[in-house]
Picture (cartoon, one colour):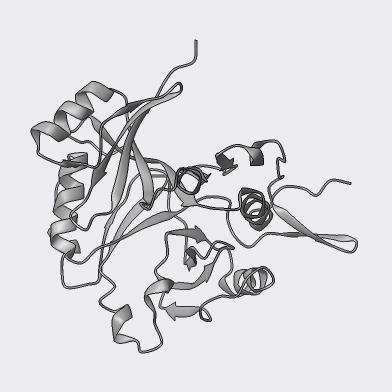
Length: 273
């Protein structure tokens, strides 16, 4: 019998997976928190929230579907046991942090045991390619956020998160297994494998960098419904383009470099006729 997505099996039983099948937040690691907050706010046409620049290590955007967290890692670097390789790319929500820890420990080695901070607890772990991820539990639940009002043709919405991989079959089996989703052998032959998620940003395993011999990494893409207006906006605002815009068969895209050199994509999906 085929295993139910969203559960793991043991002899005679089905056990719900303690991780939610979605990306709750994406991390961007920065050196100057205010500079980064101002850059991303300007890109998406959002106001700066000064109360979030109060000396803490992070600034966050409550975007619909998947949040964006800018992390200066100032608190982490005060911990002698913390290492740069522990910086997570993104976060999976955990229904129960201890169950999630035991579950992940069966599949990979966590960097540390769950850390508890009042109404939240988290731990970091790595995927087969060495990418660091986070599992996080928070008390209570929050409703899905509405689209934020903005003055930019670039939407305040993360459409997809990229995970660079070299061995697509191994990575796709691992991520689909982690989230209790079926593995598609045929799609694992493609340069991009979209792992099914319940909502929020798409989880895109991307082998293009490996195939093309590219040294850069793309973190995620923001959506636009008007590609030409978005491109004109970033040029008018003097954002730094990473390269020339590209028009592919299913999308148009361009990449920007933030103040720390992080590569962010803006994309418009083409409607199918």
